[in-house]
Amino acid sequence: MSLASALIIGDEILTGKVQDENSVVLARMLFERGVRLSRIETISDDIETIATSVKYLSNHFDYVFTSGGIGPTHDDKTYEAIAKAFHLKMGYHEKVLEKFAEYHQLFLSGKPLNEARQKMAFLPMPCEIIQTEGLWLPLVVVKNVYILPGIPSLFEKLVNGIKHRFDGPAIERILIYTLNSEGDIAADLERIQNAFPKVAIGSYPKTSDAYKVMISLEGTDHQAVQEAAHQVEVAICGFRTFERI
Amino acid sequence: MSLASALIIGDEILTGKVQDENSVVLARMLFERGVRLSRIETISDDIETIATSVKYLSNHFDYVFTSGGIGPTHDDKTYEAIAKAFHLKMGYHEKVLEKFAEYHQLFLSGKPLNEARQKMAFLPMPCEIIQTEGLWLPLVVVKNVYILPGIPSLFEKLVNGIKHRFDGPAIERILIYTLNSEGDIAADLERIQNAFPKVAIGSYPKTSDAYKVMISLEGTDHQAVQEAAHQVEVAICGFRTFERI
Image (cartoon, rainbow over all chains, first blue to last red; front, side):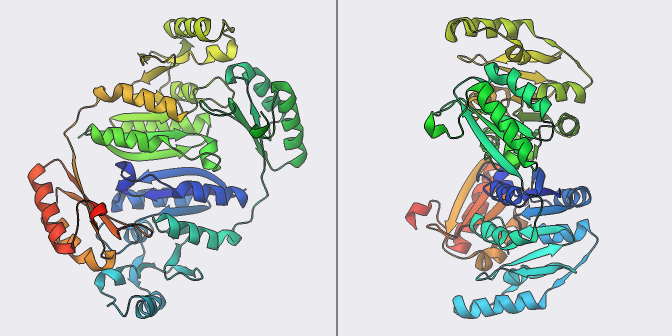
């Protein structure tokens, strides 16, 4: 199974001004497509810090997805940092500039493509450009790094647009809910986990809901997941949907 | 200013089953208390991975806050991983066990303190125990690592309970909103940022709101923050509250 990592870039998240909504969107897409998201790093808008993380993640994972820092203002430093991470030069990408100009002509009554706006087409070279239907913003790919915007609505559109590129083994997930406490079901869960080493069994307590613990079983071996789920269900008085509790 | 880092532990976040709600709570508390949160790492429930991150973060930052992996089930490995990170032995903490027994007597009609529940008192030694009023769950501190639970309601209570321990220089924040686009205000923002190097000026576009861009000015120098904010306001037709727009 391929391994992925995410790099969330932005002081606004580290200072609590904004809550990161992008990682969960990426996590869900990758899970669905059979790619394992192994690590998320959330860091500051600082060129050195971004470059260091990109280099590390690009070397250790099959894919890196960055979020944020590709706008026109002074605090947007992601492209520059990625060029630095890979010792690449930067240059204006002609096709991206053309697309921007076209968009400005059509939707912004010909507002000038000033220096700040042109900055968004000043990219690490070489790079791949993915154009999402109906969107002016390109998705820039440098080596194994997918460079995504921080704005959640744009992030989600771009992530959905590249889904088809990822196609790992389907991961099956079964969720089981129980009214018992974690302390009372722990021994059973451990026994079943040991019997099914290929199934990942996770236990997630809730404090204010219709159930006490949600147990998740995940794996690519259909029969093992089903059998382990059945054993969990019986052992802990579990239900497959908590509406039934 | 002290530097902090956070380590969010849990496969449930990396597979998108659950959205991390704890980092933003920690980020806001640290910002209010004048501590800079510099890095968040989100990783899997794996002892080696946790130990490696804890060691790195503990060496590079004044404080580390971990979230998750301290429950009674087989997938809770944080205490063991932290012991490993610092080459510490583990042992049952007598006072914590007593507190658990007392709680079970009072609220769980004397449910047995079985092996799984006792696991939550099997801690890296030595450690500091912080008891939060009205809560049975201890906050365990090992060196500069604060070990917090993943359940958001408990996480928040424990974080609020330790606020007073952190007391850095007050950071002033002014938010300014505008109906102009980032591409049109970028040059002004950069000029003002260069004139006030001690003030962190951030620019955050919205795509579906009552304003187009939120500009944030942050710093410990009151006069510099105020003066920079005034210049931004004038340059970009900004308002201090977006309800006025």
